[in-house]
Image 1: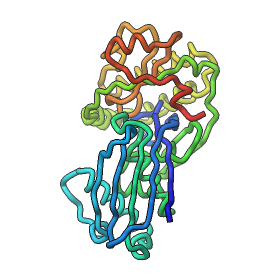
Image 2: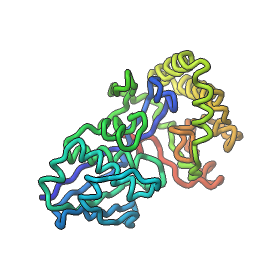
Image 3: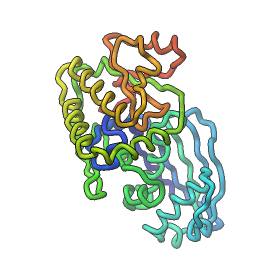
Image 4: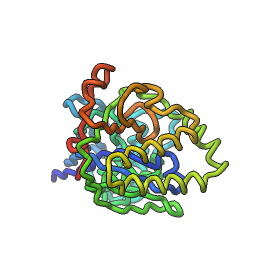
Length: 305
């Protein structure tokens, strides 16, 4: 019997890094995501094939049930080893998916480019959890790690406030639909980079005044969510960016790449090379295209509302 599951992609607007230590995070699920299709297979194995948004196969392999049940930690972080690790921890939550089957054919299909950082892993984990009727947050924690806000986005079709409390996820769906969403855009930077330095700086500095930092970011997050004017929205985004810049000892993305831009540019997620949020009085496509950034989405095209 053929079964299909779907999960939303994600963008983390506020609370980056600090969400790991209990700060409130404001996140938006995207209209783009990932499908998972399951069909019966054979030979006590999973024939796995993953498609990118353009229809190309980006991963294909056969994984035996024995590899899943007897998984041993590998030094390599290859796609194959990562997938087996996820399936192994799924098996620990629900052994029946192995014990009662002769095999599976599994296809995944992204509706966003896997380069974009919109949640290739989180949408996969949530889809597997739906398939096997297990806890997606627990599967994330045991196999991959992270705050879990991306799993919450995968499961919700509206904006959310996300918080970890005593290690447990608290998810509050909210209505975020201000009149100025037509002035919000998302630009893909295509500058994938390691965030290890930023993480190291965060870990080194967070203990100096963590509670104060979380309190300030929580306050700014509330102001961003409930900002009634675009000017106030911009101002609070910029305050958030400045606060995190100091905490991470890292230049803001506007200082680094777009100092002449007449508008607001905010880093998202792990301050890497994925998407940024742009607030502009007019469509900024020409500005970014001239600088070599060709992937731009108006808010309404990318975000679930």
